[in-house]
Image 1 (spheres, rainbow, N blue to C red):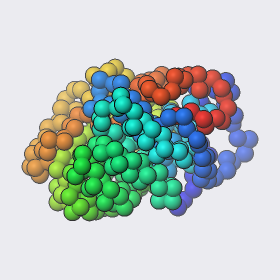
Image 2 (image 1 turned 90 degrees about the horizontal axis):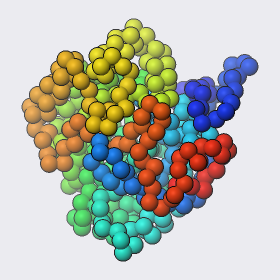
Image 3 (image 1 turned 90 degrees about the vertical axis):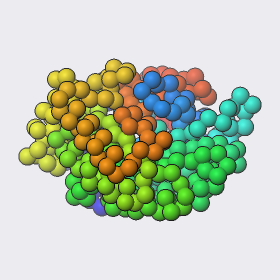
Image 4 (image 1 turned 135 degrees about the vertical axis):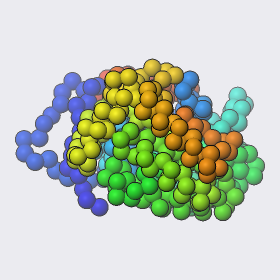
Length: 363
């Protein structure tokens, strides 16, 4: 694995931003174990199709340049760049907290999504097993679940997911925005290769699970032409549904993504920027509810048509389809998210940020 040097955009929640006097050091993995106050988060957004999520980790080793969750790391006094990719917070008591939440008389056995602001199957899960422990809790309480991941590691838990599906309901979505492995490695460098994700679709389908794919985000001018190939391979692997959403560059995601784009594909960077503006009404981002997870204009309509044509051609029309609504939380241009409506914790994200210090005693 090639290490990147430490590189973070200025944190808007900190009063100071330090610059390195010399070459910055390499960004190496740092793990912080957290004893959380809560783990079940209520998602109150008109743009999303789910209401509850569990995040066993903060940050993500997959290091996807476009990751919408990057600004959440800034609430911890960290950076949205390499800090998000290498400084990972582990909620060691997540399963215990989830059990307490699901045991309440007020709980109505609503579906729980894994996850909202992280990939619950990032590499650390292989050793910590927190996601698996949480799934066991859901099985014990016969609670339906949905999983969204880029990782082949989800195959490890096919037995638990199949058991949940028999007693309640379980579905898995693999996020596969690229068919080209070389391009995927440039934009999402630590995530499993696309073929491994397609293999995960195959293995989970063979286990009897309902599996879908999310072509998300669609980066206009970069991966939109790959839609037919992605859906063809997904269908061949056994996927039953497919969804998509356009790239969003909220808050500190923008400088991180644009820098990676210039480094990875300098000859295509300006075209991507121009196409992004085409689908955002001349802007780089859209933060309005009801609009932020959709594009507009002639170029976006051509993408929609290509997706619908390909989806219908390959029969990815299962009832679980979430087309146009990628089931993950998003943030607006000021970094304001809608995932912090946590029923177990009254502290707001701005209160957390105001501490300007490392503290991991909140959910």
